[in-house]
Length: 91
Image (cartoon, rainbow, N blue to C red; front, side, top):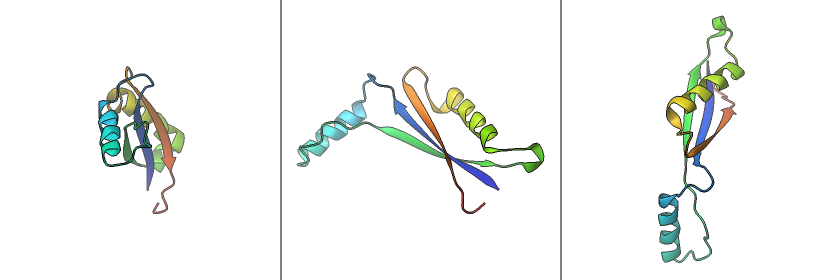
């Protein structure tokens, strides 16, 4: 069985988002003139194998994913991240 987790990485408020700004300009040029802001984000879907013999549970998995974010997935200087446990109907 696995536990699925979605991690969304976003730039912190006040950090420049050149990709979002370029996308906004392109949308405006395509005629979508009401678009005032575009912010980019990245989402990772992480599947973690449950190990019942070790007493794995969602809280332990969430702590492990938090560590992944701190060590690799997000830059704490410019990013905020949000973790969402996903119900896996296959497990």
